[in-house]
Image (cartoon, rainbow, N blue to C red; front, side, top):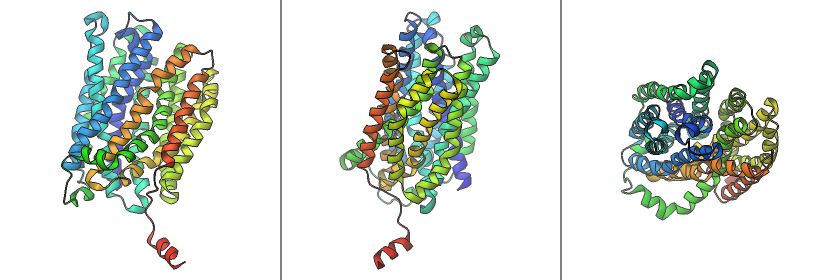
Length: 424
């Protein structure tokens, strides 16, 4: 299990590095380079729109790779998704700007971002299912939480690279070629990920399936549509929190508040670092107390914290901003530390790869694709403190709370506890 968990963590870190480095670039530099005829605010919105395309593609990727995972196995998904995401990310680093090829430049960005999302849509399901289906029942949340650390690690690497380049280069150098370096680095990381995953064993649950679903998506939609909608709605707030902190606030802080790029990245990265470190700790609570209670707690905490977070961000001071981001990340971690076990447990093995992955990425569309765009537009209409953004995030938190309230608990009942209950 340690070796398998390490390989899953490394793979998800690499794929999410690819995904996040685009979000950071969209917040900082892509608007002026690819939408120069727009105003600064409209350029940022347009860059965030290309960012959102990746989330639209993710459910499609989960359908495509989920079909492969349920029909051919979890291992092929890990290799194919990593190749697709890595290749499209490297290609972004070679796209000429608007000044060179005109409108073809943003169109190329759009296509490559779509391919990124397609690959990432398959990554999560394959990586998580290998961990979940190999893990002992009593520690299923713990072992499946390691792939969930991957996004935090990928984010830290992506933003660390951008922060280092921002410090080492002038603004002109960063705009001319420096922003491309993190995309080129994805090729090296993808090669390392493929090497790590080459020796992983296939999931025992998949090998034990005698009757594979012919069309997994059709079966999920026909028999589990309610479960699919509830899990997507429940996960929406997690995505909304993460991208409000890591993408929208980065653009808002640098453009509206005049905070330096380095200060904003440092505050955000500090909060994400704590989030990654605490994920396995919170996962232990999920194994002990159950999955659903932690999801409900995380949603409630998010609903209570969005207004304080926005107020702390509006100060433009490093410590208050960090505390605001940290509170949001703690609410996020409370939910997402258990999700990697919770979603697969809700589905039977024959459609598990498709059901869990589509539900997970549907939450990304609802919460992640729109949040930077909506938050940027709402902040433009408000004063120094964008209360509209806080209200929007709070509403999503309450919506997700209602969705999780309608889902069942899936924690395995211990044999001893069941016997004691029967005797009592």
